[in-house]
Amino acid sequence: MNELTNANSHGPAWLVFSLLTVICWGLYGAFLHSGQLGMNDPVHGRYKAFLFVGVAYFLTAVLAPLAMLVLKGASWSFTGPGVGWSLLAGIVGAAGAFGVLLAFGAKGTPAVVMSIIFAGAPVVNALYGLILHPPAGGWLKLPLPFVLGIILAATGGCLVTLYKPAPATPAVKPSAQQSVPRVSGGAASQPL
Image (cartoon, rainbow, N blue to C red; front, side, top):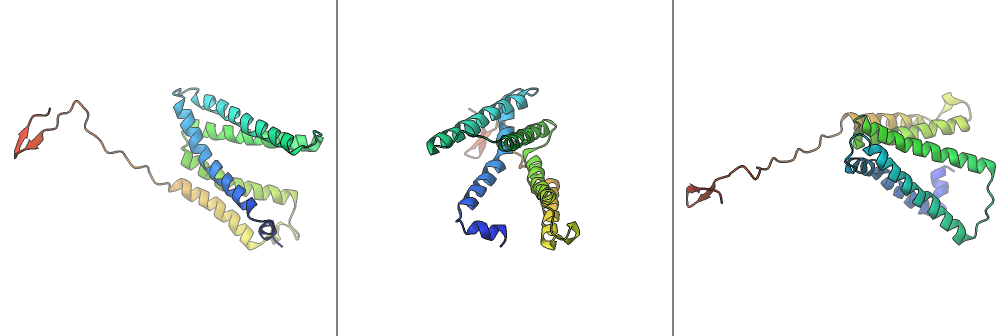
């Protein structure tokens, strides 16, 4: 039984939470870029924005699970491997978020940067999974749909990056200092 079929036997909650993550992480780059620009500090704005990402991480990733542990009556014993791997996960997550900001600072746009990240991350995840759990029969016996999926993910990220549509240019409005004659009764009149 594959993982998708096995997960379906426990209900759709996993899919709902997965899609919530897709939406949140899909908006992350755009919101972070807006926060950077909103700081009105072209030199240090990205670091100021990241500081508030850290505040949000504290609120979301420290206070929320702490409340859940208290409400659920969890034990307060922690194992070394659990703490170590969890800290490492937090470090690579935060380093990745910082990498997003640095990419924006190097003139990457949210649409391009996030496309590369979200096309590349599943490939890295799949390869890491294969390293942890090598395939039966060796690497040369990988299922063709899996290999094709890796290729399509990487190709999709490249295509989205290379062929991203240009944003619409705003229409030029006449400035308040320019006078535009009004037509009244067939004759041009002076502006008010």
